[in-house]
Image 1 (cartoon, chains in turn blue, green):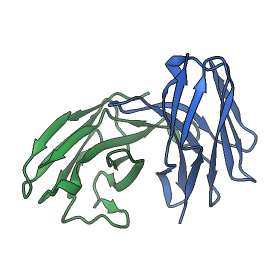
Image 2 (cartoon, chains in turn brown, purple):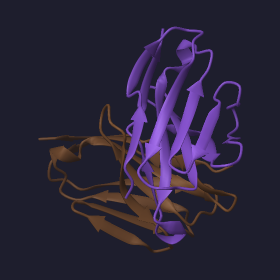
Image 3 (cartoon, chains in turn blue, green):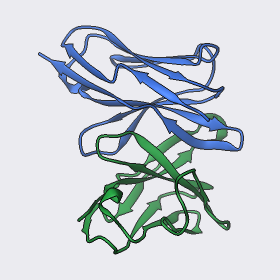
Image 4 (cartoon, chains in turn purple, yellow):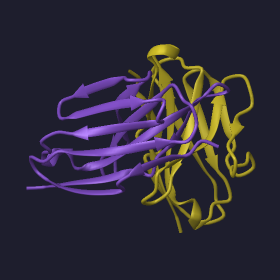
Length: 113
Length: 116
């Protein structure tokens, strides 16, 4: 059974600081997603990571994937208040479970002035 | 990308009743997925809906409680049957777009259900 664990679950940051959210998963997968969810809203797709060593960047967010370590990171650079949200990683089951996502618990990010 | 709409966006229901949630996609997709997000929790996959075949359910979810229809490649419904307060959740449909290599999974806006 695929398990996905994120840490930290709660993250309070000051504006301008850097931090990393970690996503560990238990079985091999070739596809990992990062999503953002604002309160009362649906999920917004941030990144899709497909291969070992993949790195993608969008604005102040950068995601990477290490399939050998079964680890993905979401790095936040010089945080701003607008980044406050809940961030989820999700891992595709692959094979006969292709398309079925298992989600991490989510990281609630709050950026303070 | 994909534009996904869901109806209703929210509802308040009495226990013992049933609610059918609709999901409409602006393009044809093979697989549609239904997820549940309980209050303050992460998302859990309920079932996969393929056009022309029976839905496949994940552990802990059964067809009698969550019957699903998939009449064509752009539409699906999820019914929450014989509701109890524990069914209060956000229900989201999801589709994959872009082909196997470039695929991204998109989510609908969700249906917020409160059962009294």
